[in-house]
Image (tube, rainbow, N blue to C red; front, top):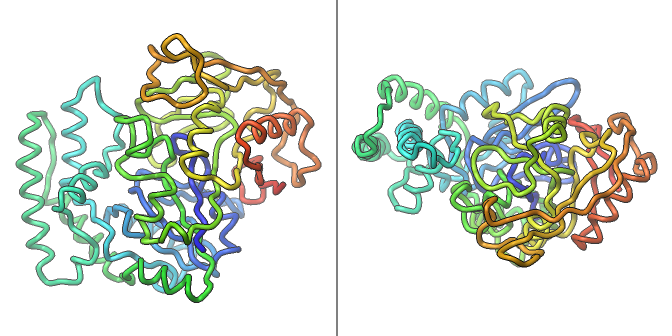
Length: 422
């Protein structure tokens, strides 16, 4: 069976840390979708490290890490990631495999991304400008370049045709984008040379054989469920399926081979970039969450918008993903709040509803809150569930009852040791 680990909010839930904590129980960690805007932050032994494309099990000797077919890879960023791992003396060749069917982000994809966002003006969606959206557009338009193309002599000719097409499209947007393509291509070719040193695999066959051999596999998602291209807050979403179904298409895993579905959520809610956010706070409470929680994007550095926990959206994510167990992150950030609020329903078009409707823009939605008691205890030094303050236990019990799924892990800090198993 293949277990899944997914984010249940708008990304940045702390998936990297939990994968790192759980890797000791698995033989293979496989990333199934997304691109290098997904910064997974890991902290251990006094070191803070951010991964973008490489699965979060890379620091464990026991696990093989697979970048699946649903991922889009920027060779330039990938090379920098590998360069940053050199000091850890990891045997990358035997520990990191790349799917031949994963698509490549070209330099012109990034330029297209910038041109498209600039053309939108105030209506921009908050793209990270990594070229991810245009790469998925080429994938679905059946024009894309894949990792497996690099094994054939004509890959550069394929690249040229696609890059020329992109340059013509950039002209169509009629915005002032300054760039030196020759310089960008030199970097790209360096990245390709590095990528070609790794082992390319038919990942769906590799995962299938691993299952037959009884290997334990954890599929790692990027971004969050509310950014799913189909089920997220469209159009303010990413370009891939971030939900459980994306693991099947992004790795070639049959639905009846999915085991545990581990859902990660913060004890409050955050969002990066544009898009609706019903429980967003613009007061001192929101500022405190952002400051104490160090809410800045691991990849982009952008400040995250903060707000109270949205149970309507969280229930929706649990339902769509078939979550079997939950993990609550950043409980320590809420220490010191006298009272907490939890959104349990929305006022929508004159009625109170408890499901996520088609449109949750602020002009259509008023959150309905339930107030619960907060706690003041510093959680960062706690190591056992018995040490959690009563008010936090009450908060956990309330959420478990509402979501009808057990919360198995409570994170009380960024380090892998600051993890309480319940």
